[in-house]
Length: 154
Image 1 (cartoon, one colour):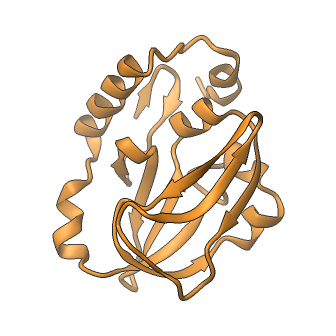
Image 2 (spheres, rainbow, N blue to C red):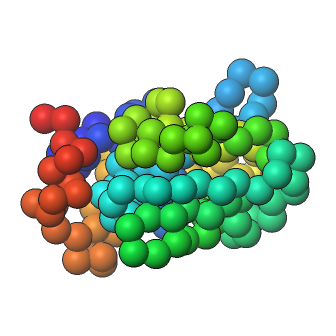
């Protein structure tokens, strides 16, 4: 799926208000990563500092800090759970998030406290595209901006 040239794979769930994607893993874990839209908003990412493995993350609380060109931002979790593992490759090479946000640039894996209850809050497919289109409208997002052009795959 694409919106303004940005990719949103249809095999993911999305938390548009957090600019994060979520993927259910076979072992019950949930992998989180920054969306292409999040990458376009932040620009080049210079550092990702996650919380420690084993740390319990409350919903809406930080699972790490993302540093980019002009600021830093707390990466807030859209669900409560225990941080199983952070992506060491991204910690060492944070630009990997920009280069492959849906693949090797994933950020953390959580063991959700109650995935069955939380899962329904996330969107996929056309609902995800509609939600991101609204976020872009509210953010006065420029789809022709330089950061977006760097991420385009069409």
